[in-house]
Image (tube, rainbow, N blue to C red):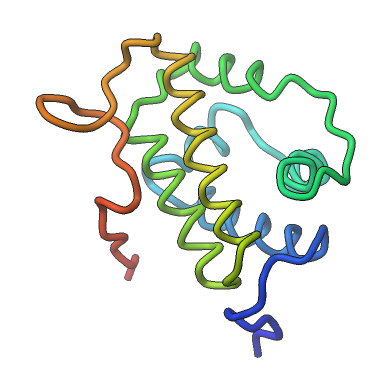
Length: 153
């Protein structure tokens, strides 16, 4: 039985740990973005999780130290296999669906908004400031609000 109420907000590191474990379980298994984690980066979740939890704890609560360069590993992945706007859009879909499945409240909304901002910033930085995003005549990153997340059977 899930002991988390979907109506409770993200309260701190313990909640972030659960969110991130669930998110990365889905991301690693995802056909579109999973290979970035499993085949290209060879991500070890137990090594990665404390670092990324520090990142999100700092982003949401300003209560953790995170002094790493978050861009560098993404640049290395992008040089091995270009990450497209659709890849970043899928990341945002999974991120938001994970949060929505566990939490509701201002911190949860801030985490979703921050995730989308980070995805857009990384996409633009990796693909260039003129990277196509969304809108008339453009392709690439699609905001979650415009996409229905299909469940995987």
